[in-house]
Image (tube, rainbow, N blue to C red):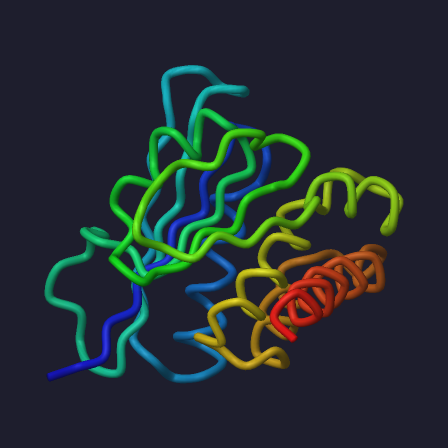
Length: 182
């Protein structure tokens, strides 16, 4: 039997969470030579509607490419938390943006809270890298890929002028969540 791990990034359209899912899948498949698939879903709105990106990572070929019960979920908005937390496995993980999810959903999972968007805006200086902060946070929370693999996958996708910004964003998210876990 293979080890199959399912992760969901959820929030509002335009927050870059689909890109975060793609980067995680690349970290697993290209950098670490695991099997990975990524899928996405979003509402009809171009921006602002609920969206999700799901990544399945396995040590064996993946026979069904859709997430069923996720091991870990990130929710950047209240709508996303309300809509997507219901399919977290018992004992799973839920990471919420402290500032935008005021009412955590109930369930048999462990909840972690971290101000992802405000960290991007205030600590990094650019709200646009909130998805990279979130990716670093999820890598730290789940341990599904190595920190170095996640960072390498991020840096493969950004223009040279934004390498340091994205490196700082990824590592800040990683370090902040590692501190929560300690």
